[in-house]
Length: 192
Image (cartoon, rainbow, N blue to C red; front, side):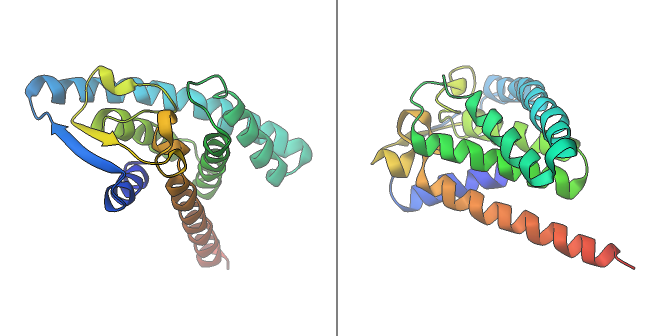
């Protein structure tokens, strides 16, 4: 999660659509972002338990793994439809992010890793980089950095934040392909 968001912000910085405006290394900021990580662990964990721990296996057991991944990903995205500044691209990215999370959970055969990835994804956006998390301003409580995002909405995600950008779409495709490659390689190595 940390690496994915860092890659997205790095590409935004390279394209000139993100600029670092401040850094706060005070003890209060460090303590605040540490506490916020605990909150993101609860929030990310709860979403993963619902989507990947319950919906995906229940649907998958009845109609197959692929449909379990697809339907649980659609439901996961739908849960964010009322978020501020949501766009069709943001919804597409939320579906793709949920597919990535599903593939990760399936590759690991566990929820623990994906719960951590989800928490790190949100925490890094809001409390490390100080940008919107799915249209919400989680960084108002505590953040290490503040990035100013400017440019066309398709490139920056607009008010939804980086999750609503075309950059995120590309990074998630790459991330999903890496998870699939890892899972296939792991399966091949464990085969007799």
